[in-house]
Length: 322
Length: 246
Image 1: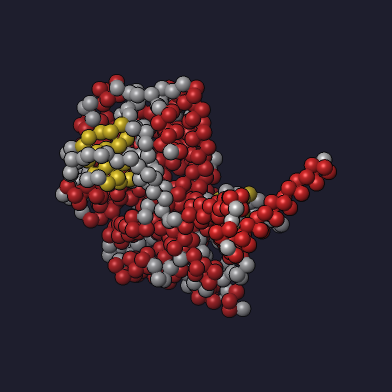
Image 2 (image 1 turned 90 degrees about the vertical axis):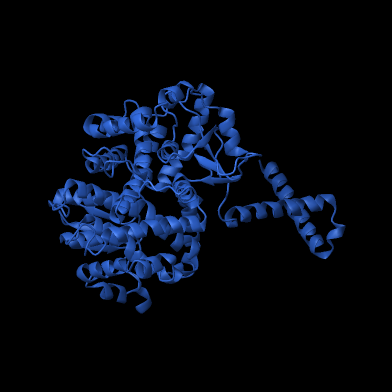
């Protein structure tokens, strides 16, 4: 043992010696650096550079591969392919695509598991540029295409509309994350039609989700507390909806795309969960509302879900790490 | 907690600074709620984290509890209090939606400003010695991770500021000319919204947030002053007796 330690100590001393000589040489006369010395100096320099770049480069934009040719003014909508139970497994995909249908904005769907410029899905390509975040995309397309689903609302109602959107997307959504990724991960095997290899991948992604839940704050609560929080959100949406056909009145507005997005996951992709029970048994006006939106804007729901594609492990891995 | 009185609320929070009685918006929220409801409490100033690793937290009948929202619900039941009793069910729903928007979205705008964009001023704001800043740097990189994990940290500066601006304008529009968010008397959501806005008004003077709340939407500044005058008459006393003045 002492011999090993002695050897290690000797090796470390030798390494330090080389480093010291190399750095001195670098400052004295870099042209005289030997290849070994160059490596010894360059390696830590590159490491330090990489660390600094990671912390100081500001917003890390994910590199996305764009189409070589595009039609100007056309929306290329990127989302993961349909599953057996739902056209899109991310509520923000359901939201964005529902909005496109509500606003009658023609779009071409590009199914893929690749992440968008903010490292998330869904995303769009428009006039050669990639854009992420369903909310920002909707605001952009409103301006670009002269669309305003909220035009009949009073200013106060627009404010209420935003509050409900944010509650659903920044609070209730995380209850869904906990339900899907932590409490019922096994269900994803059937949902995503994956083999045990796919489940290994999902289990590794689950680690990240747990961290995200903790960082967000929701993950610090117990299961019961989370269920209580989600129930109060769902009750609030149900109470506010009441007997109205849509959230803000007789015609659908932007908030309906957002709320429908979250609800559709609950109704279709969380079978047997407390969340499903809430919207079907305890607050059935939500189930009716979901069906109303689905019938109106997703007449092709059945067709789409028949074309479900199992999760592609290779695509997901390559989009996360390449 | 030695010799705790039964039925008493021990309110654990960081000590007041010159700028504001409590540096966390959830502390301002919880304490404002306690003051609106008239629930007596004993503040225990310190920096220890509660059972969920966050502040504020309370001790009650020997048990520690975390999360201002859950604490509020607990105290409502325990003390038979209901600030929302005059609201219709639909208004209660709207009230919850605004609470969640301001705490799960707008809050992160303040966090980004305080911990990332304006970090240089943190030492002065928190009134801590330079050596504590080493620890603060650790919290800062932790906060960056939180912002990314939440999602809002993925946005560019302009995108993020746009999002937060829309939140604040929504609150301002909904408040309108009313004295409190839901009408003539304060309700639970006012504690939550005041909690977030008070940090903007009094601890972020040079920010775009401050400009929105004071210049673009002056009804928000008036609203904050209204609540401060009514429920924090001892504001100057609390903030006057801080470390820097001793």
